[in-house]
Image (cartoon, rainbow, N blue to C red):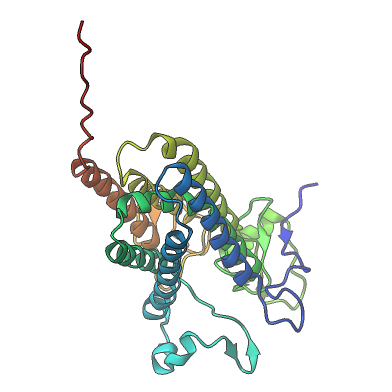
Length: 325
């Protein structure tokens, strides 16, 4: 018999062990950086970009610093609706709440991307290296690291998906519950044959494990395409940067169909006759603001591809001499 839903594993906790102030999310960040570093160093040496360990380490210092600062500051400035961080700015980097260690919570991918761009651009200007070639090498190495970051989101039980009736839907313990007397909630309970029990007014419904979908699309699939398909056939410097931006935008656009949408924001575009429910898996004609940002990334990637192609450096001229007869 197919289960109505999958329970979030009870043995899985954001904290590695009781009493130890280390969380899985932080460990996943370290694994992401380490994976990207190993792949970048391998490709830098293989392609002849550089074998200078100090230069590679310096590049990664600027990239990681930009990623962390950009991701955190973007989250604080854009998503902190209560403005707590602006009123108490030390909380931006303070990992304790109410006397408990909770780590640094709240990062934004788009802010991290902007931070990386700023960091590696600064590095290229200071060290006088080719930004396009170094950026290409980073672009083909980075996506696999996202896999660990999204697994960290799953362990935290955050960025959960929309309500679903699929058999692999997961019941996350700390997500919003829904009223039993809501029509669409009653329909899902009937479809899934879930009996919430008496005296229950609110029910926790199964959701898409969208974090794992993103780990697959933004991480593994995108990395496989860039690493094995486009890396060996890079037509000109900067091509992999542009393809990365396009690929991530497409992957994120697809994943957003399953990721929970802020009901206060709702959909940016709603077409068709089907009712738009941001909390439930809806029609492909219902587009969220995050998906519009993803489409903008795809467009930006296409423009970068054209720009890099038009401004590619000329091929070196190789002179040949005929032997005397």
